[in-house]
Image 1 (cartoon, one colour):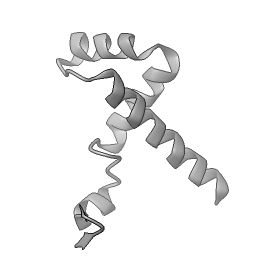
Image 2 (cartoon, helix red, strand yellow):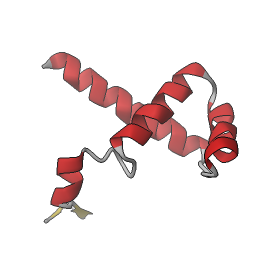
Image 3 (cartoon, helix red, strand yellow):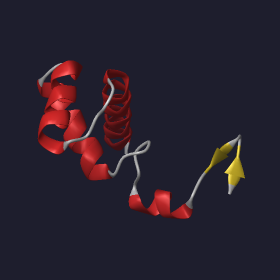
Image 4 (cartoon, helix red, strand yellow):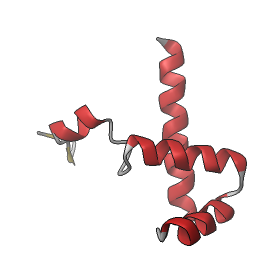
Length: 75
């Protein structure tokens, strides 16, 4: 399905993919970002999960999670 230059996969819609992250990863990352600054989250992810993230990815994904939470409040 192609709309406005964005490819949407039905599986992504059903699984609740947030950006390019699974719901659990997005929730975990957003929680960590709410507790510590992005560089500390980046270091924690690299040290404990061998996953390299950028500060901007952490911030953008956390913003998306926040927006989803705000949308749920409106319902």
